[in-house]
Each structure stands twice: as structure tokens, then as C-alpha cells.
Image (cartoon, rainbow, N blue to C red; front, side, top):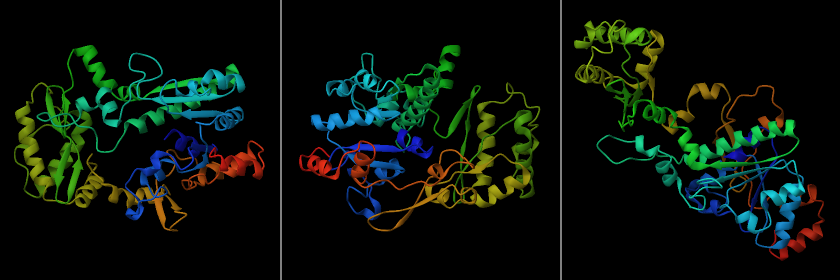
Amino acid sequence: MTGCILAGLGADVIKVEPPGGDPGRQVGPYLRDRVHLENGIPWICGNVGKRSLTLSLESEEGRALLRQLAAVSDFLIESFAPGYLDSRGLGYQTLRAINPDLIMTSITPFGQTGPLAHYRASDIVIMAMGGFMGVTGDSDRAPVRVSVEQAAAQAGAQAAVGSLIALHERQSTGHGEHVDVSMQESIAYTMNFELQWWFTQQRVVQRAGVRRFRGRRYIRTVWPCKDGEMAFWIMPGKFGAPTMRALMEWMEEEGKARSVSGVDWENLDAAEWSQEDVDQWEAEIGEFLRQHTKEQIFAFAVRRGILICPVFDPRELLQYRQLDYRGYWTELEHPLSEDRYRFVGSFCGLPQATPAVTNRQRAPLCGEHTRSVLEGLLGLSRKEIATLSTRGVV
């Protein structure tokens, strides 16, 4: 993720992987279900815009080449266990002596220091120990993680930001930095509200499934409709009253409003409505929404200013007109099959960006750019590269 973000900003990002390919290439699912190291969807999505250099860090020649690369680079991003690169003569202090401007960004489960620094962890471990799982799921069931792995993505995004902060700082200090990113801390960072709730109230935010805790009540946020789900919650007060009045008027027009019809939403005192009131209103509104499609509800919401929106699945998101209009998607061709696939665009709009930013490149084949990197950046000859290849160095 870190390299993808930097590549999306125009950086020349070189993915260094062992000869034969990074183990991440073997992770499915695969394009068209064809098991091949160039077809892993997670790999393709996570390496768009990069170049690939195969290099063995288990050989001294390979390590020497990496040191030469570090000497001409702005960043080195790594996710090895703490101490691994030091044991190979590639630690930050060693590389800093070669290139004082170098910014090394290390991403590990628990950071470079502390009692858990050398612990291994998967996504579910980080989501659990970062606190996110504790507030995710239904109140009467065990905690769950979100369905898509987020720990590495969140840490990667924060690592990209940290790297750019170090780059900005380098302009003032004249030297690089070692950016230390803990995946656990990256997830804990997303828990600011829940942590403050404990600090200030000594109360733990409880899992509530499709509901959110508001004051002393749990309020539904996801509602079934005729062909999917909508996102909406009951909002009394000056902010929510226009939405509630418009929804009540629609329900009244169709003869579906009962107890909700006479509520003074704008002046409703939060202390006056109970969980029983909320449950009754939600039952009535829920029955109404289940009789309409997502398109019908959203179209009416736009016309009447109701704060309610559809919950998109991936298929619907790919087809959504707003993203098409903005040219968000990038179509890239797979080099082996010549099939074209749609990928997410840049994480921010940069209308005046150079082609290096706007023209995204597909994920590289294994070792696709080994020769061009070694020739162009390190000045090696084709004969030298061929010799390194026969020795298994590249």
C-alpha cells in the first residue's frame, strides 16, 4: 500500500523481490481462476505502478546491490521483522552512513521497540489487539473483524504519510529519518472516539451490529429495503428534523405513517425519548423501506433532501455513474492474457498533475525491470547482469 500511494504521486517505486517472486504472488484469488504467480489479484492490486527487481538478500552480492540502490534512493520501505536487515548489514544506521538523505520506513506488527516488537501477527491479530474487533459485530455474539483485511492497508497508508512527513522534514534538517510504523498503533489510531469515551466517561463502547450508540439509546444505521440495504438513522433536533419531516411526509402520502407522524422532531428533547420509542419508530420506518428499492428511495431522498443513501456492493460501486464521470477508474491490460481490468484510481484528484502521476501502470511481472534498474541506476553491463543471474543473485 505504501509503495502504491507513493507511485500514485509520481515516485519511481521499485519492488525488490527474491528470484522466483515474492510469496505474495502466490496468494489468491486469481484472475479467471488461473493459478499463476502473475495472476494473484491481491498482488496485482497492491503493486500497480511499481517496477520489479529480483534480488537475493541471502547473498552478499545481492546485499551489496541493495546498498548501492539505497545510495541513490529517497526512500526504502520494508516490512521485515525487527533486526533482520541489521543482521544482513542493511540496517538503517548502515544505510544512513551510505546515504544520509535516505528515509527508511519500517512497517511491523508492533513496531521496532517494546515487549512485543518481535511478535508475528496476521490481520485478525492486529484488528483484535488494536481494539477494532472489540467494537465490531453484534452485541450478543463474539467480536468479528471487517470482511476485508484492513490492518496492512491502514498501516501502509500511515506509512506513506509518515514517509512524506520525513521528506518534508528533510528539507529543513538536511538528513533522512527512520520512520517506525506499528500496525497495532495504526488501528488504535482509528479508535480515538472509543478511547476518549473510556477516558472521559469510564464507559466501554459496546458492539451494536447495525446500530450506533447515541446517548442512552442504540439507533439502527443499516436498513433492509426491497433489493438491498440503505444507510440512515433517526435524527431528532435541528440538524435531523428536515430529514425526518420529509421522510414522514412520504410515509403519510403512502398511508404508512402511524406513531411517527405526530412527532415534533425539531423540538424533541433527547431526555424525553426512550429506547422503546426508538424501537417503535424503527419498526414503522423499516416496514416502509422494505417496500421500496434502493433506486426509488435514493431518488426520493435526493428530491426531498433526506439524508439516506444506498449501501453499495463492489459490483454496484464499479458501475456507479459518479465515479465514472470523474474518471476515477483506471483500465489496465494484463500482459499475459491481454485482458483489460478496472482498478481504483488515485486516492486524490490532482487535475494539474504530470503524466507520471496520471498515467498509472499495471503491476509488474516478476523481475520485469531487473535489467533496466541495474543498467540505468547502477550502471551494470548486460554481461555483469547475466553473471549475477547465473549465480542466482538476480
